Length: 439
Image 1 (cartoon, rainbow, N blue to C red):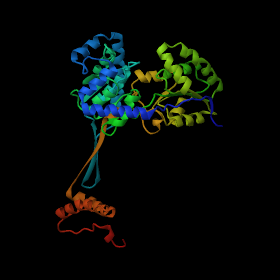
Image 2: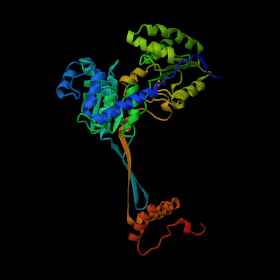
Image 3: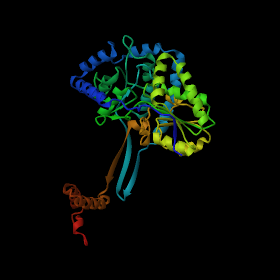
Image 4: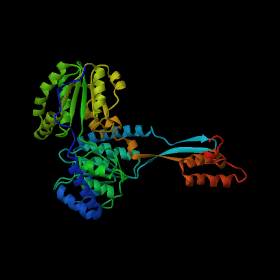
């Protein structure tokens, strides 16, 4: 049976990309040409902040003094979880070598990027957790210099808890600058910072577009769109918890999709009935976002059975995928396309976003079909090397010369010829496949 939409989204998460792209490209070009002074001009214009752009040690310490001890304890707890998970990930990478043929050895090395730029949103919501996820992971990877960049508030500066978290997790520099100008400052190495080899962290559509434009000149974690979440629920699920989880994710922003896929009509109808009251109970700023996201992007989909549910979820490839259904092991084995998976009622996206340990910077807009989220691996390059003895390189050189000539790349072939002639002057070699018998 085809899936049935009990609620269908009226919009998609696509934005007016052309206008955003033109605006961002113009700002990036101007900042690259004008350097620190132009970046400062945009900071004055968009951030309304006249304080130090690079925080001093004294300012970092002062910010830490403003953070309540209980919050510091919570941040340290979360940071330890993120660090330990990243360390476990790093252990899956190792230097290795292999003797390809006798006398020829090849290998790989895992080398961290030298400089990382971590963008930490600080507008409507102060994303302490984004500092945890990005700075900690870059530190575990072994980056030599980590810049944490976060937008300041006029007359106030960066949220003290973000400053405290970035410093605790290992940031070498903290830049009070938001938006395109902050991304540009890290990428171009302004204000005495090293040029970032990689830029990571979530942000609004202008931050995301700046990273997209700069990709290639620098590495990025991923092309990010609005955050999205999907819940798979069967008749065993609690409709109150399902509804609360959908609303909790809808508050991210007006264009953040939230989806429910279920095989139980009664559950779906109950969730649809509960959600409006949960949205109305939110504080005004949260309510406005959740109301728009649910109205324009929320969906409730009815499927025949769990296989149809899983197939539909894989088609959506959500950033966050929650399963509140029976037989969690089946779902874990079956599901294939998601950024991060939350199995059972006892866990929820907010746990992963804030304090569990696995990274919360995840693929959006269906990108989970082909990639996972931010990890320690993103900050590391897997590079290869090789060496050979003279006797060992002989069959390699012969094969390379013949393949090169077949391709028409004579210069390549001659780099093999010259070595064979030097190392084996008294021997002859058949180095042109067209001269072989039967060719």
